[in-house]
Amino acid sequence: MTLEFSQLGLAPELVDYQQAWDIQRELHDKVVAGQAPSTVLLLEHAAVYTAGKLTEDHERPFDGTPVVAVDRGGKLTWHGPGQLIAYPILKLKNRAGIRDYVERLEAIMIAVMADYGIPAERIKGRAGVWIRADEKGPDRKIAAIGIRS
Image (cartoon, rainbow, N blue to C red; front, side, top):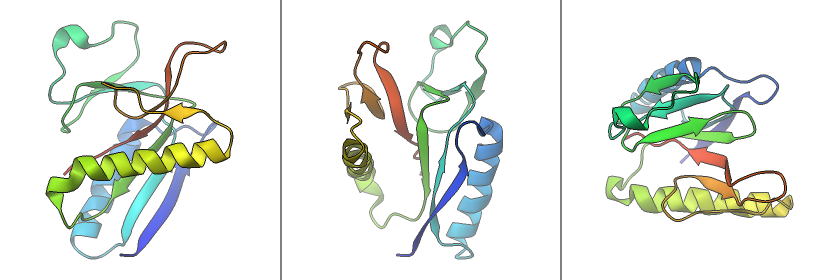
């Protein structure tokens, strides 16, 4: 499988969530049609929450941060500055193996961050890759993987 990586924007050039979502949908259509190679989009968003299909009204924030309803599974997810987002747009041969696929991507991201001295890890019950609370602040997500089948 040919796989390309495309950097859409990293701080200070943050990518608006809706703009990234539009790019993902257009690229997905091209990948499915065989008109583009599988691609991983790498970016940082301006602060935003995405509300998956399982998000309940009482779980939405009230701090003024935008919330975008999306058609993925899951609940509420924060995206923002300092958090690397990886959106793989590709055809998986085994759709039943999506969880395993996500865990492998997280492991790769954790290993790369370790090479740079960043103590990233998974936290049980939370999606994405995290840095544990330290003198700089509480637990914080450093990387997320967006999956939509």
